[in-house]
Length: 239
Ligand code: BTN
Image (cartoon, rainbow, N blue to C red; front, side, top):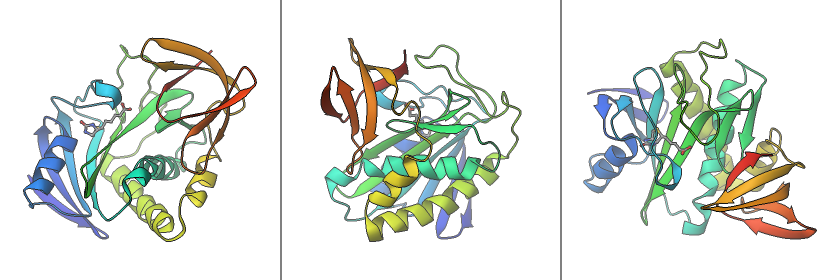
């Protein structure tokens, strides 16, 4: 393991981990890592996605977890995934103008999934896990994926991580000082399928709705047969 610093962050780099999120949580609970520390791995043997899914993690892609320790109210913690999504988008925009954000927190490139975000927390610590398909992407997935390489975009993992941390710090401070509205406005600059009919899936239940808005808390507002509804957690698909 080697470590290096960038701005206020210290990056602990491992060649292989089960999951950077698990490692970060273990090390924060045993008081070996703290706020602003980042666990980075070249590959993961048990990478985790949202909803108990796997995140296939071969060498060549970016896998990291940022530790955030603060007194954030627990109901505001999900907003951090939007801060991560806009920061990732902002750090990729100089490479491509075809980045969109899919609610709640996927980053798409050319309409396909490029990156995923997994937030885990206990009462004090948030582990913000980010995976970016730099070199390769999975094919056996519920939503089509892509990689930077497939789209002929080139950036090193280290450069991308630094870009992300730089943008994240600005957006996170903005959020801590002024709340979610600036984050929401930024997210709404590049939304995937806003105003369109989408299919939402919650377990086995599938419904067609119109994606109307992102509300002031980060919920998705949809129109279901003329009735406005707020959703906190579902998967979104095109129809
Ligand atoms: C998703 O879209 O389902 C979220 C994927 C999150 C993957 C990242 S890779 C680094 C960190 N460690 C994990 O085990 N998962 C996250």
